[in-house]
Image (tube, rainbow, N blue to C red; front, side, top):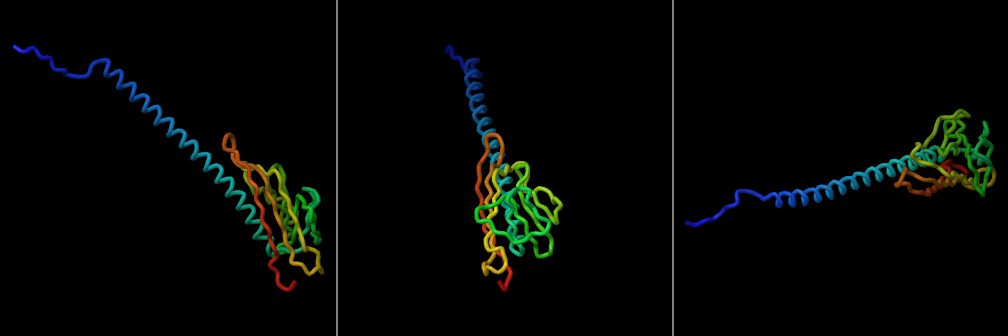
Length: 183
């Protein structure tokens, strides 16, 4: 008679080892998934902040292209009710002009956001709380009448976007030239 033993299942030691290997693999997969999710949230947050800044800058540029009587303020609260053309080659923290519809439009930095004014009344902030504007500078050249220069405004924005570990610094600049004919 032959005495042979056949295994009918796994031993307890084999089960403990396989469960340990499975737990390590599951832990690695979960931590990788959480890292990817965290990176995706950071990317989305930064992209949203950058889109917000680009939208604000493009809105300013689009309206200012058809503007007239550009006034560069010497302080953030230098927002005249009726702008008289004034250049500033060294830059200023506020800009006031008359748009094509005849409204007096002004921009400034306030509470780390870009604030817009229409006819001396605040129209609200153009940037969200996710974006912190540190520096907003306007350079105006060719604004006074009679100088035969095409008026142009250069806008420089410096700040930070995002929060926590995803904070990112940015520097944006654009130059706007007036689109009026007959200068």
